[in-house]
Image (cartoon, rainbow, N blue to C red; front, top):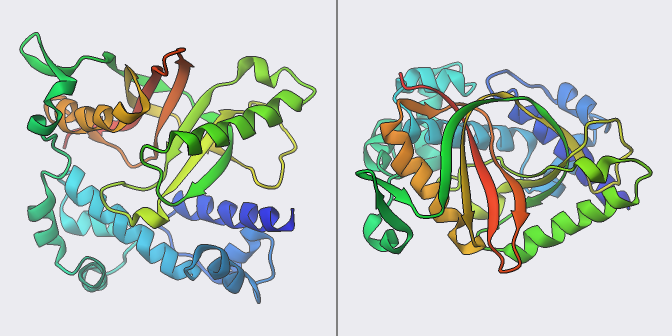
Length: 295
């Protein structure tokens, strides 16, 4: 479908922007990535995303900065520069316009945003060797992960507890892979990549990519894209649980494990890798979060 080809090209631009937020962009450059004319690219981008390219870039920079303010301890000025702002006054003005408060106040008010409310989630937790640990966590380890080439279908909008959505998208990918004249289906790995911070971004603009591994050059269908999940050092936490407990697994890792680990999340996308689903709906999966030493 022509519409899907347009979405594929705009997703390619979004992926390009996401990996280079600290750099400057110009319209000619982004239009070239999309393979649309520079005279029409901005209107097409806005028609599909609801934002101009530079509104999207600014929002991504501000939301990334807000996430770093909460998750890390870097100075506000360093975060601003890391997110692509060349001037602290420009960052401060835009941050206050977007979040209705200064960056310093936002950090003070939200620094415990990633902590778990144990009282409301206590059914999910058990005492283990003197530490709070979820009953369905099998292990947590720091591991070097190799980069992974994947084919994806991207969803924009709310996704929490929507097992039907993820099942439909994975089935679409599996059906496509099964029809190929190759051994791809025999070595499939399944991933869900999260591009935005669930605690920061507008849920109607949340981006998530349902992916399967694709280690060889493959002709894609028009509603699909291809990207690289970056390699590096990750914390890998394996869980067995039902879909409605996935968020609690994330809560424990981010609010229970990280504060005592000596690590902090690094600036790359995080993802889940799925291994199996039992007949009673219990899933075995890894939460993979890029890490660096706590500074």
